Image 1 (tube, rainbow, N blue to C red):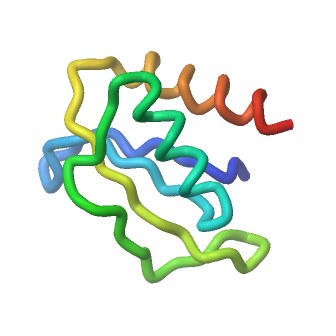
Image 2: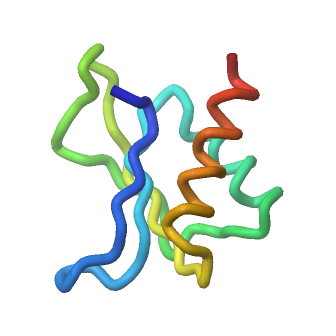
Image 3: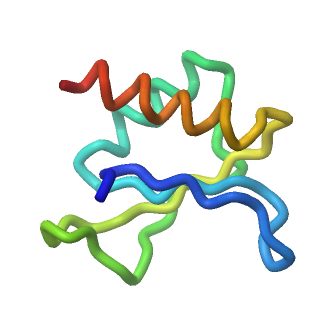
Length: 82
């Protein structure tokens, strides 16, 4: 499973959210800011953990970007982290 998962808007949530493993949060936030995206509100811990036990953090962003564009950002970030 990817350390960053994109959650698209639903009838319960009107904006995109990223579920990010805690060790990547700071760098991913910096990356999003470089791309012109800022969180809608402060990142918040989730009750679930990653497969490796890392805490998961939710980062919500309000954007006109498409789901595909945001998924490409995740892929690009993860590629740079390798």
